[in-house]
Length: 134
Image 1 (spheres, rainbow, N blue to C red):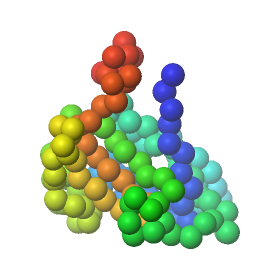
Image 2 (image 1 turned 90 degrees about the vertical axis):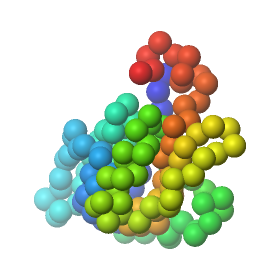
Image 3 (image 1 turned 90 degrees about the horizontal axis):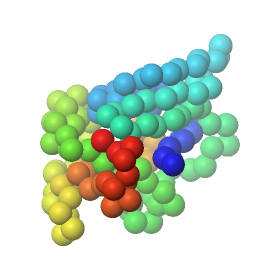
């Protein structure tokens, strides 16, 4: 059974625009009359991110150190170099590409609200063995 990340943002329309710069495509978007987002779904390959506008008292910005953050998002993709190039061309602040000691090629980014994102070629073994995986 897949698990999907569901995120809340102070400015969900800006979060959608940021994800689109990385190559995500909005497949569902429900706007509220006040300009906030009730629910949105964005896809990049097999990855799915759900998001919406959070409440006024949404928690503070995550810490600078990704290892100190309570959570982060990892997107596994065979197209990490193309996504990296697309993000750079769109002006998204991303790290250099780097190779992990376990064989994954990765890059990192922080979205407009400070959440930590990683993109890489690593696919967990359980997902790789699943008949549902691409």
